[in-house]
Structures are given as C-alpha cells and as structure tokens.
Image (tube, rainbow, N blue to C red; front, top):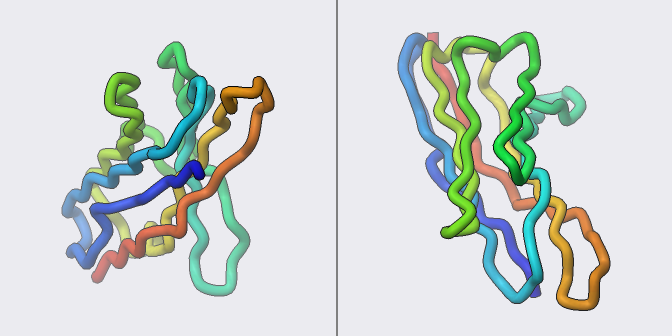
Length: 120
C-alpha cells in the first residue's frame, strides 16, 4: 500500500516562511513526477509546483520567485519551501506523485493534505 504523508503546515504571518514535506512509503518500483497542489476554501484544486524525477521544475505564476520545490530521491521525499507568504496562499496543500508499481503500472497518488494559514 503506497501512502503519501504531508507535514509542515501551520499558521504563519504574512511575509513568513514554511517548509512542507511529503514522504512516500510502501512498496513500489520508482517515483516519477511529483507535485504540490493547493485548494483554498470554495476554490478548485490548482497546481502550485511540479518536479520531474530528473529535477526539472515548473511553477504557477502566483508563486514564482517565492516557492521552491525540491525532492530527495533517496528518501522518497518531496519538499516545498514557501517564502514571503501572502494571505492568498492560505489553502490545503496536497502532495501528488506518479508512482510505478512493481508490476509496471503507473498510478497517481494523493496525500491527505496539510493546512497552511497565512494571517495578515
């Protein structure tokens, strides 16, 4: 059973920083692209940042220059460093990963989310 578990969310003042982590556990062959998504209250879930297994990254325009996505392939862990946080960054942040099973199938997994609240 593959699981993605996020951590690092919390309450922070505007201008502050937080670092989110997402650890993948279970039995699998490899992890492909991983990403962070967020969903504000009453809004749809949107892409924040994505990183390939080779380290190529892409960011939503709203977070470029403030957020940095990274991964530690040896630890099967994804990170999101969030700086200069704004109240509009308040949302539940979800980890996503494309994971190849031992049988060869590629499946899409989601974590349960971690809440980030930015106060003004």
